[in-house]
Image 1 (cartoon, rainbow over the protein chains, first blue to last red):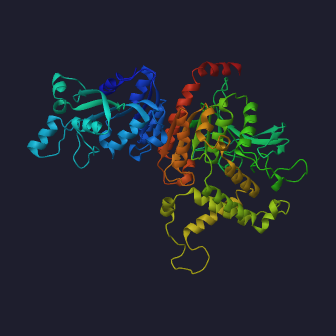
Image 2: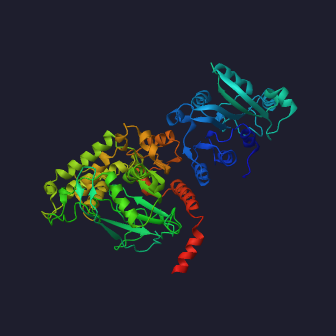
Image 3: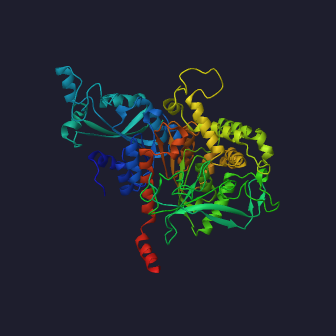
Length: 204
Length: 390
């Protein structure tokens, strides 16, 4: 079995064997390959980067080169095509996270999504005391060159879910090393650095 | 350019079995000219068929008798993306062609004269059926892959639909599931240019010992134009003129005119392309619409395919734009088919599928490597046995 990142390991725990998966922004396909090898899933990856695309094809994966901002998910896939639509660390870089979320919910029964928490105390402290946009291990960019154009906190994300009738099925909050601590379970939006969410449409 | 494959001698397969064409006409017998590169392995599992584009032919790699390199030599050969150290690569000239396969320039056995305009109109399906005879002749039960760009890509699609169990992989490049009205319109203008040339003689120009050069050159100029992108022409020619002073006449003023005239002239004279073949090929393209047999539902059309697909489009291709490839990909996804899709950044328009490009090559190499790993598990032993036999 290939070495996978702690985040991918956490995601894997949520995947039922032999399910159908779409991995948005799949990169070199590490997660998808892991899910195929370990859980016998089938499915596709989507990735915009040409070089990463080649790496995914080298792994024998099905990968569709596509821009997550091009709104073509619903053109490519019918409703409920997948058991899971996964997107790791990409929600904050797309032009309209809310619309993408809706597209994902249209084509997938459940969505697994991970993103960095802007509400972490270090970010809050940097803004409060230094008056500068935060720079941390999880958010290492300057304000002007960051690809993270739509940062949110866990509270923001959950508010959006509420507004859009999206049910949070599961949530895991971890630190930058993807470990869980007691503090994070008490005050996740202060202490958590990365969140993994599993969400679905609310059943009427 | 290095030509590792050396000089390649084409072979001809004479097929005595009549071929019933889509039009209902019957070709009593026909020839297919083809070239091969690399060695077929003992299990015949490493065969690859390349399908050529409108003006292409069977000479896809290596050198021909006149030392001319094949049209896709950059991609086929030892160590190249389509690696002849691993694959047995085959390319045949389509029926109706003018480079050795039976077509308008061949003698009609019934009349003793060249077919000319009497050669029946052939379709993509007819090509596939004829190539299937070549497959049998070569002793290949199943191609490891079929690969084609532009018209060749459509032929690959037709193969995957008509003979699903005869190919493992389908690589469809810069193609479309059918021609648009605009595509057909371009073809029609090209045909009119040829057919209204006074030297066309209703297609019997060879009997009149002439060639409709002007019409052919114009058809090619138009076709060529659709292969290039606006950006690329802008970069290459801009408004550059031949002379500093404006001439105020109808001679060649701008470099782009000179370039187009040269391309047309070259096609009509030195390349010796047959005008009737040009008409035939454009018609075959116009008629290509496999979904028409499946309620115009491409997803239904591709439901019976079992091949794994790689679909490639080029960003500046407007003849068969990426959106046309999306249609194919979408239909394959509807069927949960194994498919990968790549949109290669290139400034070269439709022509990009023939040219070198880092992303394109990397992609190709990666995908072909996957095919190699699928066909090789048995091979080391087989190669040893082959050597022992010799």
